Each structure stands twice: as C-alpha cells, then as structure tokens.
Image (cartoon, rainbow, N blue to C red; front, side, top):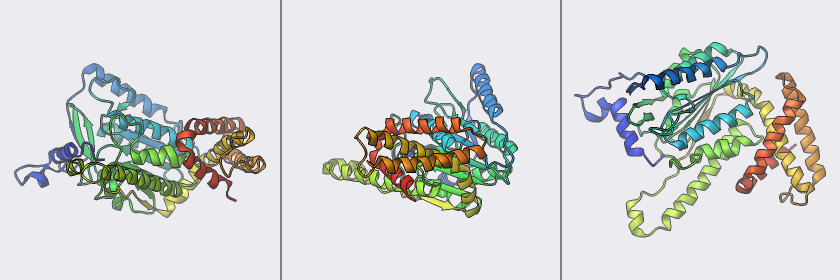
Length: 396
C-alpha cells in the first residue's frame, strides 16, 4: 500500500532487517525470529488485553468428527482504522462462507493511540496463542484453518506490526510458516493484504495450502488510507467476490479483475493531473495480486465452503426474484419462473449441506435471508458484481 511505505521500510529496517540495511555494525535484535519491540501496557490495559485474548480462545468451539470445520484467524497489524475495519469485516464474511461463527478469532493493533479497544491486541504472542489454540482444537486430517492479516508491507517482504509509540515489529512468510507448523496446522487458506505480499507465495507453495496475496513481491497495493472501510484487495475479495457462489479460486480471479479495473481508474486519474502534480506523485503501477493453489488444500476448502456457497447463491437469487416480481428485475434476470427454479435448487443444496453440518432448515433459511438482505444493502454500489453472482448461480 502506497501511503505509509516509507515508515514501513524504516520499521522493517529497525526491527527485522537492520543488519542488511545499515551495515555490519548493527544487528537484528530479534535475530530473525518472530517478535516485536514493545513498551508494556499499563496494568489495567494489560489485564484487559489478557482477558480479551483469554475469552476469545475459550469461546472457540471444538471440531466435530466427520465434518470439515473451519477455524479463522483474522488480524489487523497496523493501528489505523482501515485495517481494523478490514480484519473485522473479513472475519464476518469468512465466518458466513465457512459456517464458522463459533470458530473465529479477530485480533487488532487498534485504531490509534487513545482509541478504545474492541479486540485483543495483534501482538506476536496473541497471534501465536490463537494459532496454538486452533491447532489444539482442529483435526489436521479433517479441518481447515484460514489465516488473514492486513497491514502495510515493506519491499523486503516484511508485513509491519505497529501500535504507534508502543509496539513495532514485523511478520514474514517464514515466521508464519514456522508458527503454523509448530501448531500442527495442515490444511490452510492464507490471505495477506499488504504491499509486496507476494513474498508469501513461494514459502506456501505446497499441496496443503492455498495462498492469496494483494500484490506481487515487487509491487505495492492500494486503498490503505485510514478513512477507508477496505483496502482495494480486501474490498474486491471479501466485500465483492466472496459474497457470491463461486469457489475460492474463482472468487480470487474475480477479485483480481476488480482490482485491475479500480487501479486502471486510479491511473486515469493520475494521467488527468497537471504535469506538475504528476512530477510530484509517482505513476500508479498495477499491484498484480498473486495466488498459489495446493490441490489437497483446495479439495478441503471445497468441502468446507459448500454450505456457504449454496447459501450465497440462494440469498442472491432470492433478492433477484423479489425484484423481478415487483417489475424491477435486473437486466437478463426478469424471468421469475427461471429464478424460482434456480432458487429452489440452491435452497435444496443448502439444506442438504446444512443437515450434514447439524444445521436445521430453519437455520439455513435465516442465513439465506441474511445474504438476501446484504444483497439489498449493497445492490446500488455493487450491481455489476451482483449480476456476476447471479450468472454463476443460474448456470447449470
């Protein structure tokens, strides 16, 4: 992400790469290990944070034999609102898609100095504690773990961890890989929203992992202004693509297309600026989001998301049918009979998938209604995306 890049680079140098950046007289104080330099919280703040992480760990539900359960860890590592917003809402979208509301932990670096905290701090210890508890509960032979984090990133591949004036550190791909291995977590979906996050591709290019990143290893990403609700990548993947009825790879491809479009608009705006402005501001370059898909992990993900995908289709179709019945149907989706048939098929799939997961038809109907309500709320801003979802859900 462009804004804050310089301070991220300095943070990466100070905490995780000083020896390389500043010459042989300086050493990495962490010796390459996952960690952070931090000032202690006040006793009251420390006690409150300990309670928050303890409660979050204790609330995680056990796995259910015979069911592919999903555990989700979503973290904001930089103390600006956009990152906490993204971590929170991504956790909500993922929980719905993977039927994982009882198996989610959200961590956050907060919203800035002095702001009240809602979530346990996104410190290295809390992050590893979450992975450790998830590893104890999940069955590595049956379950899926989703890890998502969002922050600024540096050109050396470090994803920054900051609480301004209190904590500074970084997490790298090898740190995450080591923590997952130590927690005995096998099948996983890793999603990283940060500049230069393509550094996470190669270390996670294995059969047991699907990894998605906001940018290539040599590219920045966009949309990290503190006032935003989402970064470009988070908006495209979670707020648009994963609300539809396609699988994870299809959703990533759709998200990458949206990011490409939005970045094209950004480039057009830059070109429309005066020459003096263009001389001061670098030309935006495509972020080029990356992915690598392990076949074993993809098969596990398909089982884990079957229920959520069916619910997404049924909810979007239900909203489209309501519009068709009132004479305001979307172009190409005004045939109420065709929509009814597709909706009935999607609902039947959702009921079947739900029954296998211990969900009643009433539970499923409520989830479908939630998706339909969300489609109504987002329709004006996301009509092209919603039409893409409907096309996917109407396909034989």
